[in-house]
Amino acid sequence: MERRSLGAAALAVGAVGLGCMPMSWAYSASQQRGDRALRAVHAALDAGVDLLDTADMYGPFTNELLVGRALKGRRAEAFVSTKCGLLVGDQHIVANGRPGYVRRACDASLRRLQTDVIDLYQLHRADPEVPVEETWGAMAELVSAGKVRALGLCAVGARASRRSGARTHDGTIRQLERVQQVFPVSAVQAELSVWSPQALESLLPWCAARGVGFLAAMPLGNGYLTGTLTPGQGFEPEDLRARHPRFTAEMMAANQPLVVGLRRVAERHGATPAQVALAWVLHQGPQVVPVPGTKREDWAVENAGASGLALTEHDLAEIDRLPAPRESWD
Image (cartoon, rainbow, N blue to C red; front, side, top):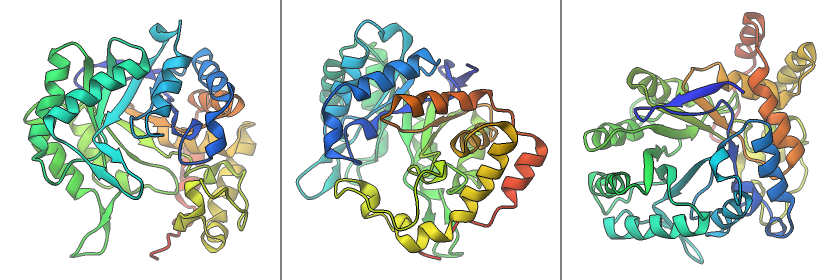
């Protein structure tokens, strides 16, 4: 698989990563049982996927434990990315960016992951009660201590501008400018897909201009762009899509032209809509690494295959001409 470089630390990773969250959190409570997820991780590693993305809040904690189990005897093959900064309660998820908490969280993640070092440690969300420079400074100390190799920041979804109404990442860019003064940002993780291209406006150009890697979260639109979901289908109560406005029957039906267009391109290449969607993300820049989440080994292998799919200029133009994605706020 093609290798790509992340940021100032120049860390090389496979062009397609693996999002581990669906294996034990946010999609189905039943996923915490059995070895299915372990097989998915191993299949991804065998296919050249080495960036495994998790977080302490997934579960909470169960996802890191799962990744730690999966990497027994295979740690050297993997690039482990995890996150801190969010606490999961019974009713709410709250941010915690206090330096003491960051240090304790890192040590706990290292134990769960059964490793001596985290390759990429990401701030999941900034704490509004703590200057982000203080949180980032504590994370930088972890690099100096040899517990972490590089730092990243997760971007909150694009927000509507009060002036124009357009959705922008201006708030995230301001955060990035502040923490960059403390310690280099190696990667930014934010949503990017054919369905959600907002990062192309300002966030991705910011990263490209500074040599910062970009981890494309939800590059398959929470599974919608795979073409395997049908409008009006039900989701398990634990599945985040059961409550997501994108996955109402109306919105899924309205966005079917995106899937139809991806399938049309895929048929010309003997590929799948998911592979075309990932190849489109890969085309957005040499520092972009899509991180599709899955719990199935066959889909992990299919996603890895997108790294070898070369879209033509005709393909890209056809995708660009697809109808603009519909959102619940349209």
